[in-house]
Image 1 (cartoon, helix red, strand yellow):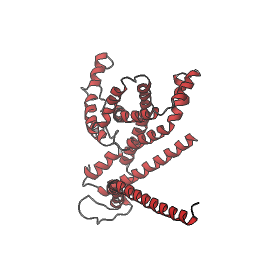
Image 2 (spheres, one colour; image 1 turned 60 degrees about the vertical axis):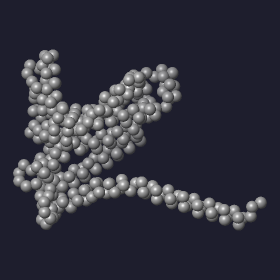
Image 3 (spheres, rainbow, N blue to C red; image 1 turned 90 degrees about the vertical axis):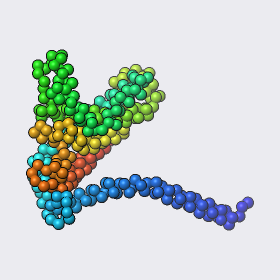
Image 4 (cartoon, rainbow, N blue to C red; image 1 turned 120 degrees about the vertical axis):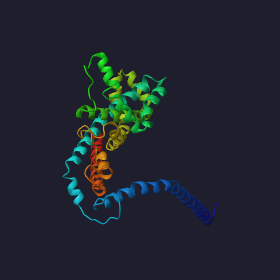
Length: 314
């Protein structure tokens, strides 16, 4: 029988050795996340803090911060019709892109996963290409496609749907529809990949059991696929909303906010005020105030969306 003193000493040595190993692992973990933490502080936290600082000054972006105006920039922003027009357009764009992306990418993922299994890699690559293409290039290409002498007008004239070229980017409602289609097309492949990853986790025995019980494709989708994919769908929904709230280069190259500011987004509004003002010197402080207000609104939208998703799950 081993004496109690020896057992206690062995346990103490083992505990000390395990503690050192655990502390070593923790320090290695801190070392690995340190570069990411530094980038996050420098490129995320610092700009956010400085935006709040700039927003309380009347500052052109050059020279020291001297003209402190307090909340004056915020009072001007909340009464600026152009800001709220860009906010409304951004909200419409977010709704349109989300409504197209969520069911469309899910349907495509199901087709690739169940029908086109043998050539799914080829189609995944084709649909994922816009994701890795520069957004500005996508905007320039689509500007030519929907231009007066573009492919769309030529096709409709050829089949007799139009008698003369239609100005898709020169009319407010069609221009917004084109911007929504362009934004959806850009991220269609990424959302499809997320859905495909979720579809790979579907338990095959449950699907086979449902088929044996006589469930058709619609019943499988409604009662098995969608409920199991609900957590993945929640993440995709949040990604759709947050990514569509920030659209700049696509609109800049496709419509530049026109016609008549009908596709003007908040990001474009902030850019114009900060770097390319229509009426005088750059207003970096005013643009920063607009960014802060939009950031708070975005945070509120995400909170409300999270609350709705939790209630839906319950």
